Image (cartoon, rainbow, N blue to C red; front, top):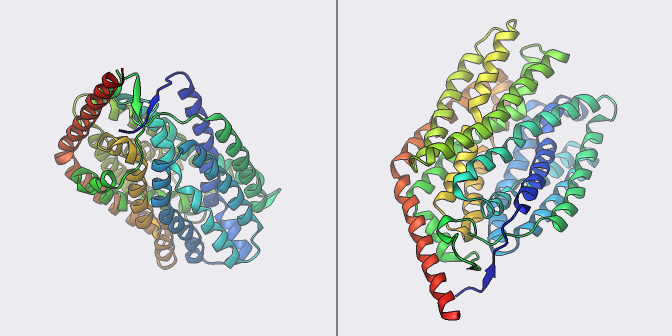
Length: 438
């Protein structure tokens, strides 16, 4: 029997959410501002769009390779301290990237920034042990809105500072913030008990310490719904990587946007995109109370509408900027519907001690599939246009995701019921152990 620990619920969980909101916002700003700085970096090194796409691809490959390692470490050791390490790595590798003076050095140092990009499963796993399942979609939606807001913040920093301190100076600023946040997380975030927020375990005064074990990890690959989510993940991040990396350049070079028109259009789309994350999480939580399929249904509707609306939006003539912006905002609202609902669904069917591992596998597959997306988009753009590259990659990926979600809808209830049964058995065993100890 694992050693017992006493749970300490309280308001600290909201402090943790606040710290991770700041961490993810600034980390995403650092990660995504390269899209806005792409024209400057290309001019600095004199490279093509294909070579610039390879810069993002390199970071995505490194990130994918590190997901399994981060997942294992999170499930085996304290997540809070590991997240502090991830923040320090973010800051230091960003500084190295700013110091690069040749394209080869820039390519290598940018790839090294992918090490900390695969650290998010620890955040989601830790937060899951502070919040019960009925609230997780909203909390994850709140955390994930930092991705578009981080993109917006990165764009503001890049547009405001690139003419004065250059793209290297912007990297120095964001890298320094990463090092600072490492100390905040290390000294400020407490480690919760794994599984402490599960309803089946809520009545227990003490709870066993459960950590990563190979039988539980291998069992992940026997869950049909999880395997289908893994398959969906292979295609799911293609659109996000293409849009965040190339859309600014697309507006500037193919639609003729400059100055305030460029900023207003991007800002409006990103703010609407940010609103989509908590909305998706709240809708997923609400429908989940009615059916275990609820979160996946919301995700499926989102990707289908996103594909349709993007196809319509990119067909608007370049001179009609008002209609383009309105349709782009509507498209952006539905793009993130899968994000918080996929994470919540993964945790709806996995044991607490292997949740970081499960989500790391999910993200490993997502990153390995999408790693080539910016480079593929660059290749298509060099031969045709960024319009064609964005449209072909995004629409086809979302349609494939919708097909996977439809398959998940059919098999998910059985896997959800299995987890609830396992947790009830665990609660009964803990209660018996407590009685014997008394």
